[in-house]
Structures are given as C-alpha cells and as structure tokens.
Amino acid sequence: MEGKIVSWDLLESHEVNFYDKYNQIILKRPVSQIVEEYVKKRQSKRKGYLSEIQQKNLAWMLPRPKPDRYKGGMPLYAEEWLIDLGRELLKDESPEILNLFCGMNKQGFRIDIKSEVKPDLIADAHTFAKEMKGKTFNLILADPPYSDEEAKELYHTGKLNYSKWSKECDKVLVEGGILIVYHKYLVPNPDPEKYEVVKRVFIGNRTWHLPRVAIYFRKKITYLRGSMHHE
Ligand SMILES: C[S@@+](CC[C@H](N)C(=O)[O-])C[C@H]1O[C@@H](n2cnc3c(N)ncnc32)[C@H](O)[C@@H]1O
Image 1 (tube, rainbow, N blue to C red):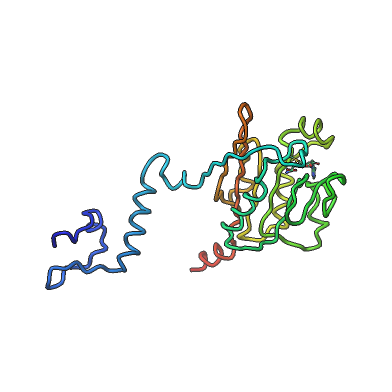
Image 2: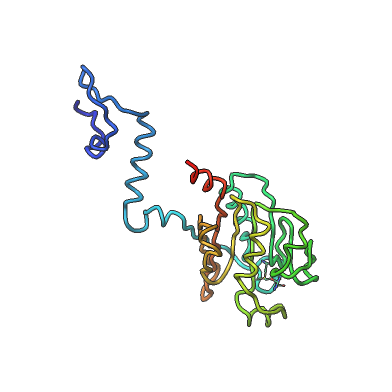
C-alpha cells in the first residue's frame, strides 16, 4: 500500500473499487482520466484567481497605433489576435468571418456604414442582415463606436442600439458560432438564453488610457438542448 495512495480525497472519491489480493488499489477508470478530472474539480472549487470562472479571462498589452491611424482604431495586432483566439475556440482554422463596424480592419467580410473605409458592404449595422442573402458566419468581430457622442464626433454617424445590432448579428451567426464585441465597457450578454460568455480579453495599450475588453459570446446549439429534453 505504501506509496500507492496519491491522496485520501482520491480514495474517498468512490473511484476505488476494492483492493486485490496483493493489496493493490483497483481503479474503476484509467488513472489519467481520474487525476485530470480530480485536478479540475479541485481547481473549480478553489476560490480566487485560479477558479474556473477566472480562467475565462485573459489580458494582453498591445502597442498602439496601427500604421493606418484610423480614428478610434484598434491597437496593433488586436484584430489578428482576437480572430486567432476565435479560431482556437471554434477549433476551426478557416471560419467564415464577419467584420462589423470594420473601419480599417482587414479580415473576413467587412461591413461599415462609411464608404471611405472601402468595406465589402456599405450598410447600417442595425439592418444589414437582410442584405446578406442567406449568407452565414461562424465568427463575428464587432468594434462599434463606444458612445453616441463618439459616433458623432469621430465618424459623423448616428446613435447606436446594442440590442438591435446584436439581433442582426444573431440572424447571420450559426449555432456554435462566436460573436466578439470589442468595447470600452463590459457589454451585457445579448441574450443569456441563447449565448454564453466563453472568454474575455482585457487589452491595455498605453498609460492614462482606458483598457478595452473583448467579450466572446458563443451561440448555444439548440439541437443539443432540444435532444436532451427528449431524453
Ligand atoms: C471604432 S471604429 C472601428 C475601427 C476599426 N476596428 C479599426 O481598427 O480600424 C467604428 C466604425 O463603426 C462605423 N459605424 C458607425 N456607425 C455604424 C453603423 N450604424 N453601422 C455600421 N457601421 C457603423 C464607423 O464608420 C467606424 O468605422
């Protein structure tokens, strides 16, 4: 027995069936599987910065500005890294990407209300879905102006309604897909019934400048919810 007991917690966790005739522990499942789950369970019980809930959060320091120097533009690498993280979470190397409020962002299908940023579609974020002709996306990156004042001052554009434009995103986002909202504020979940927060990235860039936060909302898969109901 000596040296074979990893932890009393483990022994008491009902993973042990019985001892065999040589007094060896017989485990119900492969030891790697048990230990992995056990560590996870211990971590999720742990309070503070190591808890499972805190593991969703990331922080980056990114330099500024991008060479295009577009007003209110993202820091250097932000678009690239945010989308790369989206790919990783989706486990999809080439997702269909929608870049909403694109400004000078480069990747995927770009939508902006201003023609000067040469988007793929010039459209208002509040009503763009009807112009997509059934096209859907797995990853949406949205970088709206942070306030009505900022919209007016920086871009001469109108007031924004988060609930309305996020509903438009919902129309073109596939189930299991991710909506990333990049903002100065922690924006609310557009619909907690439909979406769950899977990641938050806090981004700092220079002193005396508010950090930004990109929240990753994953659209739940209703088929799975439905099939569980039938069980
Ligand atoms: C914060 S900037 C995006 C900056 C961009 N991520 C970059 O790094 O270059 C917000 C953009 O939203 C656009 N915009 C403002 N109101 C809009 C609306 N209602 N629909 C679509 N685009 C809008 C503005 O023209 C501006 O380009």
